[in-house]
Length: 148
Image (cartoon, helix red, strand yellow):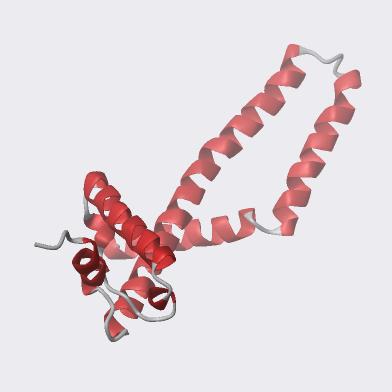
């Protein structure tokens, strides 16, 4: 009897190989070949409803499957990229470690961070020294705070 993890691993393996094959030149040539055969067969089938239905069914099925394969690949690649970026942030001296795992924040919180970094970019463009030296968000907040 197979376990849940074995089943998941098996399905992951199928999805991985399917996505790799679907992005290959052979898959592209197969799709082009199918479309050409379909077009050439049109006059012989008198451009009937069945002739049209064949292409609609095949392309609809392929699109349906590809949406899930692409989403799976994108999710996996995105997660791997997040881990790599988190590792870089964690290893850099002076980096803002609060940026690790910001993908878990709400969209509003991410927009707020983006505005903070936009302020930093504006500060860097205004301050010649800041454009060649490391600068933190705290540095920007200190220089933009009104003097008392």
